Length: 408
Picture 1: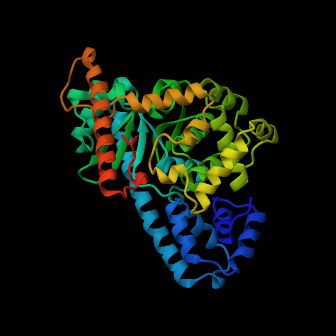
Picture 2 (picture 1 turned 90 degrees about the horizontal axis):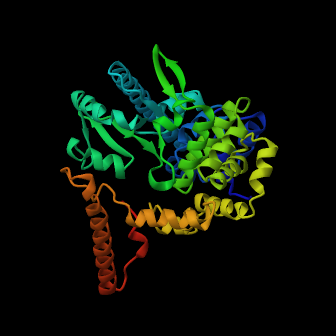
Picture 3 (picture 1 turned 180 degrees about the vertical axis):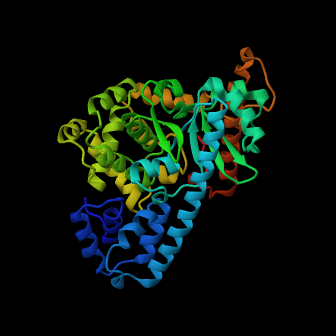
């Protein structure tokens, strides 16, 4: 696949430990006439500026725009300071939860950066994510309140039952440190047919140690599959998602159990999603995937076309369905990446009928009356759709791309 020289440079720099071939590629590219503003803006938007700084710091900077490198350096150190602060607050929280008997799995954010990139500052993030057992959520809410955390959403102890049924996470923000913590009781929401709860991962969890604090972590295979599912859910909207997959493969290449990985993907009806994630990470970032696994992926005749469209969406200004319906959770891509048409229809129906936090009231109602939330959702969507339609007809210049019917 042919890219511009700016994209070629960004891809060459999107690794925490590039090969000698990549280093030479970077040296060859930086002497060309490059649009440094585009490189900076694209890298920032796609979450790879720390990696760009790391790699360009190791080459002859006299041929790089001094203004560009100064801005890049400033961003790197600001991001590094924020990341280290977030890591400190995260482990303080894990220590508190551990003392209270709440098992928590931190993922993405600083722990992912340390595990797979070797440095907490080589990713861009502004919050932290943890997964806890559903049965511990009531205790966790109390502990978070005792430690000056407040929820952002319309969430309280009274409607906890409805949230646990219809949602999969809630955001807490610290009144002291402004740290935002997204607490999950299962991953991927309604994107999958199966809920990825704490119990789903429990038997394969690892116990790691960071500065004397022991914490739980996904197995390498579960982490890799989660990152690929996460990328699929968000239509691989940023290069950082592909980098995350490539990094764990580079880091764990000698120990990954590929047979187990494929078995887990099959159980979740996510084999095509797995194949796409592997193909993108290899095609764009040369992730060292065994040839047998790539051959299995390429047996899917639709994969090349789907991967090509994802690259088009990432690296060109050409409008796609994803970019036209920004933030949408159901696009042509989400249908194509499914194992079969039945899964695609099932997901679309869930998005249409399944209640969200917008429907859940701040007071409790008996579970036998939860049908109220389904009815309320349909009424809300019909009202919003009608309002948009009338507004469009009135102005005659409505932009359908600015309205996200599926957004919760």
